[in-house]
Image (cartoon, rainbow, N blue to C red; front, side, top):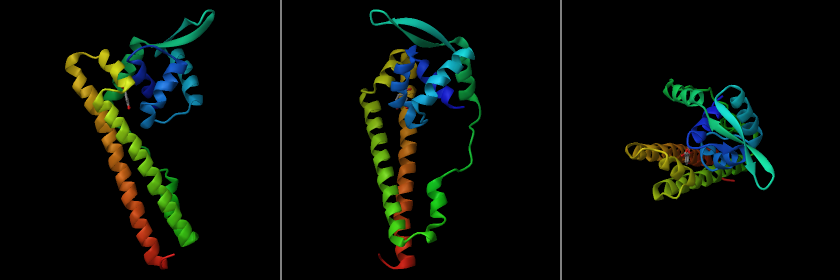
Amino acid sequence: MSLRFAILALLSVEPMTGYDLAKRFESSVAFVWHAPNSQIYPELRKMAADGLLQAEEVSWGPRGKKTQYRITAEGTAAFRDWMNAPLEYSRERDPVHLKAAYLEWTEPSTAKEQMRAHIDYHTMRRGQWQDMIEGLRAGTNEMLNKRLAATPEADRRRTIEYKIFTYEGLIARADTEIDWAKRGLKLIDSLSGPS
Ligand code: VNL
């Protein structure tokens, strides 16, 4: 359900073809709302059918045509309403923690390998988020630059700072995961002797 709001967030800047939207999505909002192209294209069609977007045929190349999606007044209102509604939470569905609860079913060496993989994964994600913050701060993020060009001067600072705030939250979470997995490594050793 949140997918359509992630799409509306991007289309609030300018109309895009499905292909351009999918590409931009991947390098911006996908870091907080991951969705494969196989969900994005059908969602765009549904949103047009629901009146949130207007689908327009635009020429592409010498004879080709492409569908471009433009946010409607209804789409803008739906995004604003959603933004102003209370936060929603979903209950945990985390295979890592599910497995952590039953590590007695593994060899200690396997359990430690999993903890190390957890550290590696979150270290990698942390790096991507750090790079994102650097691009947002340096003014080299293409999506943000387009958004800023369409944003009144008085709103630009908060438009930037809230994006940075988002990635800082993800980095803090990654740090917590890394610390937890390090504690896991120690715990596994203390329960089984070094392996
Ligand atoms: C935007 C740009 C959003 C860069 C992002 O993540 C991002 C945007 C939420 O302007 O919509 O990393």
